[in-house]
Image 1 (cartoon, rainbow, N blue to C red):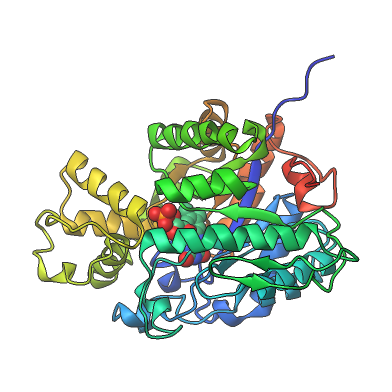
Image 2 (cartoon, helix red, strand yellow):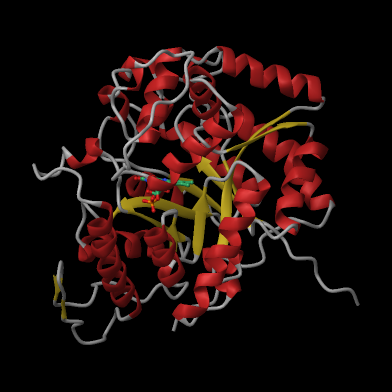
Length: 422
Ligand SMILES: Cc1cc2nc3c(=O)[nH]c(=O)nc-3n(C[C@H](O)[C@H](O)[C@H](O)COP(=O)(O)O)c2cc1C
């Protein structure tokens, strides 16, 4: 008997009109997609029919684009709060996992543990929490007047936050009060919900700094990441798996799922034409504004767009994303305009353009090369590119034995092959 082939995990990262920065300008775009529940039901059903492990919703509590001066030009200015959205999608689906983003900086652990437990109960054990510390000044401005907390403080609060939430998830039901008294939080009672059908909701994390990786190594079941090259993805994978032993965990306890932004069509020429059509739709000011936000600086527009990146101060925002952009600009000698187009298009993620066989080859190489346990699929525009991936790439992966043909379990932990927490 041959051993069963290791299979990859797939997430469908849902984002209003699509992940390409110019998706909202695509001829097929539905500009109000972010607040159209029928649109999301359709996407969730497509992903479930294709046997994806999970759908994932990002979040930031604020109007990012308005503050970058480009509110009317992008698609994510308005959109549903993700836990509410996934609660609605839970009753429209049966098997697919439901992962929502929520911030440790602008919530309290009791309220958040309760919301995710509810999502988990009402979906039959399919919930996951993408823990973020929130790196943007825009959100900070909506939650009091103290501004963005320093990176290290955000992670210190996140560590205590995550520990309290995990304790609440594991100690619910008829257990006596938890009585947590810590630096940032005080919690007396257990949750008013029974224990999760999957033991506890799945913990997802995407921090990439040293502190972010340590928090993931300590608490995460799934890790999302942005990596352009195989080498970057492999280095991240090995580094994170290498940190697990220090927390008494094994490499299989965490599934690392880098983002991939595929553009697929029956022929390579067709796929390239689809990509070029989107790239042509990127306005320069939108690209530069997005690049500025990755770099956590506000005055990039002052510099000549065809010149190089200026020297940048260290950031309190997304340190890892800043390093990625700077490295690429120096390595390939790129101007601000080149970088803006390059990063804006796929938002800093890995872009793969080609036929179903070419896309599957690329995914297989990273998966079997030890750089990924699966992928967080970021379709360029919805529903078209999710439909193409589901119809063309998924069957190719299934034919190769690299992806399931049907769900075996019912909970998100079962899909991901994760241990049930004690
Ligand atoms: C796939 C992916 C999704 C993310 N989603 C969010 C999100 O919804 N909200 C958010 O504030 N940050 C999000 N982030 C950012 C990370 O949480 C984190 O702040 C960033 O990777 C920088 O890590 P660091 O803070 O450890 O430097 C995401 C990152 C990735 C790679």
